[in-house]
Structures are given as structure tokens and as C-alpha cells.
Length: 390
Image (cartoon, rainbow, N blue to C red):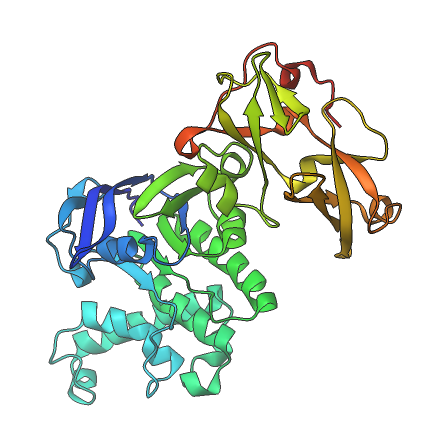
């Protein structure tokens, strides 16, 4: 299978007066798995449909392997799309559903005739080749035993694997997947996403994967593109998206439970304060600036005694989740709701209603200023001294 890259260049799309996509640019390298993630209505499915040729952009280009395919119809783009609804023909068996794209591509109308096609030696040889490819794809996805069943005789997970088989058998230059796991239960989603990653690895082609589930995006993709309001706010590795977001909206969207957001003000001495309590220093900000600090739940340290960079909180409740526990906190005097992720044995030492002190890990604090943009930390700030690192 030839390697291919996929580029979306300055894609614009509106439906009536509603602007859906605003100058979206994306480059997927050969063999790369990119997840498009964002809230409902952000434009990610529309972008995927434009890449597939199912929607036409108002402006911009789709480039596959260096060739502009914007004006080429979907059937001729050599991309395979997997839909949320599976899109299987209910009157056909799994074998027939998987074989259909190959039959449409390799056989002419006369050769596809149910009886006449088998009388022609060339058509018969092509059909044998198609069945061999179907069986190979079924073996990869472990659905060989399902080939003679119709969709109504299969579970949701089995139907999804048949839909994946239909995409795989074409040996396309790109896979496009639109929330393919959203109809599956939680346990089956975890299993099937591992199968999709393995399918991508075997095929070795570009995969664009649309999902609203950030866990899917972070666990499956080589890079994650976070979309909001018709724009890509950031595209980076899962680790960068989580630990080094460039915008407040990216930080807020990614992570479960969500990141703690603490509004602070900057003093003339360069301290960032929650009310009168300094919680960090060294922000590249001016006195009086309103800053929002972002701290992941696992980076919140809890103490019984006040320490440097500590703010008082009241423990509302502890949520036990098996391997971890979440402490739900309310800042004293400022009514900010915060969450700390703790080991269960550590959480057991605290009691609801108790006054505690939180200290954000100084090397993990994210700061956001005007318009939600990231604020830098200055050299020499506490983040560089390691004084509070766990």
C-alpha cells in the first residue's frame, strides 16, 4: 500500500448565516493517527465530511498525497469512511457488506450481474480475488465466523467490526472515522478502540478520527486536534495537550475530572493571590492583571497546616473511585470549587467539613490571561526552584 499524507488547507464552511469552519488548516503525515476532539457543534464532523468529499467547502482545498482532490467526488478519492451508524445494508450478509466496495471498484455493471457475472471467466476470477480479500480482512478483525450473518443477527460491537472490515478491505490511502464507538457500551468501547489502533498500525495510512470523548482521543491518537467554534485551537501530542495547553479552553476541555481554575490577581510584588493569599509568583503579568491559574487535580497538594503558597479550603466530601479518591473542596471566603486527586489511603485521613490548606505544585501551574491565552512563567520563579515539587 502506497504511503499518503492528507492536508486540509484553509477550509471555510457556512450553512446559511451560521459559520461552521473558519480557515481550518491541518496536515496529517503518512501513517499518522490524528483525533479531532471538541464539543458538539464545533465543526469536527463537517471537517471530516469535507475531507471525504461528502460536503464541499466554501473555500479551501483537500490535498491527498500532494494531489488536490477538492473537486473530485467521494468515490474517487481513495479514502474509506467509517460512520457512527455503521451504515451496513440490512439485507446483505457481513461478507456481502464487506465485499461491496471491492465489487463496485473491480467489476463493471455486466460483471456484477448475479448470474451472468459468474459465467465470465474474468469476472469469476475477480470475484474469487474479492472473496480472498474479504476473508483476509475478516481474519484481521476476528470476524470470520460472522461472515454469513446479517446485521440483525450481530451485536453492536460485531456490526462495528464489519464496518471496519468494509473500510479495511479497500486498502485506502486514508481512513476517516466519525465517532465510530459512540453506540457501544463502555467496556466494548475500550476493547474496540484497541482494535482500531491496531487496524491503523497494520494499514499504515493516515487516520482522521472524530470524537467528542477526550479519553478516546488521548489514548488512541499520535496527535490530538482540539476544535472549538470552527477552529483548531491546538494540535499536539496527547501529552502536550494535557500538560502544556496553549489556551484556557483547551485546558478546560481536556482532563477528567476537569482542571481546577483559580482566578487570581497580580500584586506589585509579582505575587499571584487568591484574595490576600499568595499561591504562586513569577508570572509574566502586570500588577492588577486578572489571571486564571489552572491546576490539574493530581497536582493539588493537601495539608492540615498552612504552608507557603497555601490557601484555606473546606473539605466537602471524598469520592472513592477504587484506585483513587477525589477530594471535593471549596475555597474559604472565595467560593471556588476545587478537586484534588488523592490515593485512597491519604483521603481516608480527612473528614468532611474539615478546614485544610491546598498548595498547587509550583512546577505544574498553568496560567492564562486575556482572551484565554497562556501566560509565561519567568526564569527565577518558584516553578524553577523545585521548592514544592512532590
